[in-house]
Image 1 (cartoon, one colour):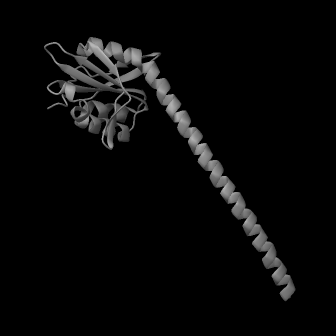
Image 2 (cartoon, one colour; image 1 turned 180 degrees about the vertical axis):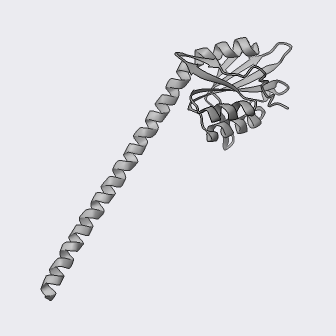
Image 3 (spheres, helix red, strand yellow; image 1 turned 45 degrees about the vertical axis):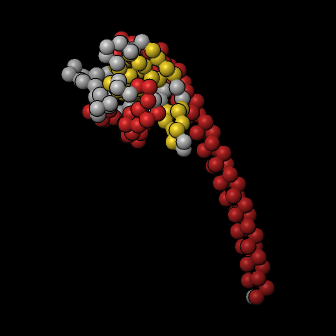
Length: 180
C-alpha cells in the first residue's frame, strides 16, 4: 500500500513538473503574441496616419487658413514628452495653431490624452504662445458616443469616408480655443 502511494505521488510530481514546464512555455508564447499584436497596432496606427495626412493638410488649410504644416513625432522636455501628429500654423492676423492627431480607434482614454496634450501644448511649443489653439482628431473607427464626446469638448472631428478624411461637424459647432 505504501509503495503504491509512493509511486502515485512520484507520478503526480512528474506530471506537475511537466505541467509547470508547459505553463512557462505558454507564458512565453503569450508574451510573444502580445509583442506581435502590439507591433500590428503600431503598423495600423502608422497606416492610419499615412492615410489621414493628405486630408488633414487640406482640412487645416481650408478650415483654419493654415499656411505652415509641421509633421512631428515627439518633443521632449526633460523627462516629459508630448506627441502630436500634425501642427498647422497661420501667421496672419488670425495667429492660429491647430494640433491634429490621428487615431485608428478613438476611445475615451485617447480623447482625454489629447485634451491633456492640448493643455500642455505651449510648454512644448513656446513659439506658438499668443496663438489661438484648436484641436482636430481624425479617427478611422469611433462610436457615435465618442464622436459626440469629442465634439462636446470643442474638438473638431474628422472621420474616414472612403479613402479620405472629412470634417464631421454639426451646423452650429464652434471649436474650442484651448489657448484661453
